[in-house]
Image (tube, rainbow, N blue to C red; front, top):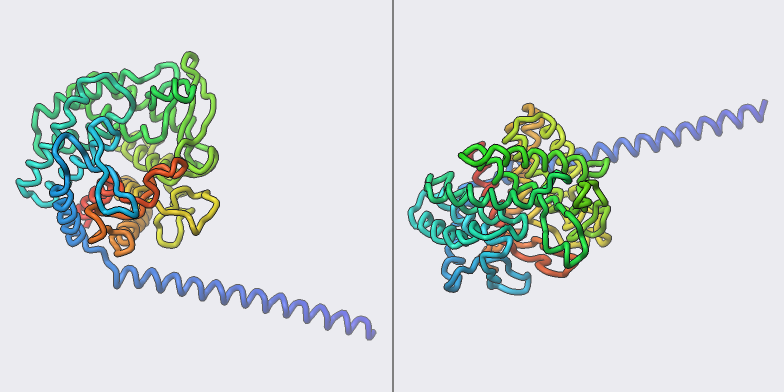
Length: 416
């Protein structure tokens, strides 16, 4: 009998300890939830994003850059974290279209004729690119960010002709067997890569879609759709994270392998690559209204959002080994915020509100003293990462971060 009583007491004590542990766990979760909710309420109530104020900031910073640019056909590209002056590049550089594109966005924001004149001047510097053979896939970045935005705003027919000619040039890189546009022809010789396609290439499909709907050959539309379909099939792991590069057999079109070039490893989620995918597939849905692309991009964005740190600005690679001591990538945050604000227009209200809130939160953080360049240099943003494995443009100010930042601000202004 005594043994039974002892056993009963031990069992009761164990049960109580178990209940206590559950209580402590639940209390801890409730406290965490309360703190998280309080932080979110503080963000919503005390830290609303003043879009106009931040657009004015961009105008002031761009004015500084205009005063600094040397003569000739040079474009600002980046500012190293320990410097205060832009590094300039010729029009052949893949980033050359972002400065004219930024100027068009400033003209859109202000309506000031001065900015139209400057945007037109720098845009026309890129015109020779439309008359050369395609060296890589970056024609879309170069020419649609510049001439595309310009035509949207001022309807200059000479711009239209240049865009159409450039689309035809980009299409020469299409490989029918693989079903994608070759990204880097130079890598065939340099690294022994055969037909190669990078996730960044999704952005350049917008040039083809636009051309097909504005007087260009209808085959451009088919190429863009096929490229998107093939990328959707071959560029993503089962968890919807993206490879940076996929290699294909040039003759058969069969996928050889997925790999990275700028990420941490072949199997890691490179932040800007995932952002390009989010932006690109959102645009493809806009152009096609094909539900497959809308469903797919939501899976791609959801895995990105679920891995973000507390401030919603990603580390340069989600699998980088020294997190939280790795550099961030403000450019990936700006690209994603802009894409989310467009994606919010295409999904049901509950998810639309969520995407818009996340984008606004990203822009709020990017607009803080921690991320805006302000008096440190003439760019808009600090803390972008270009090519970490090469050690170039690490924790730097980079022109495409500025471009997508101001684009996102303008998109948010429309929604507000």
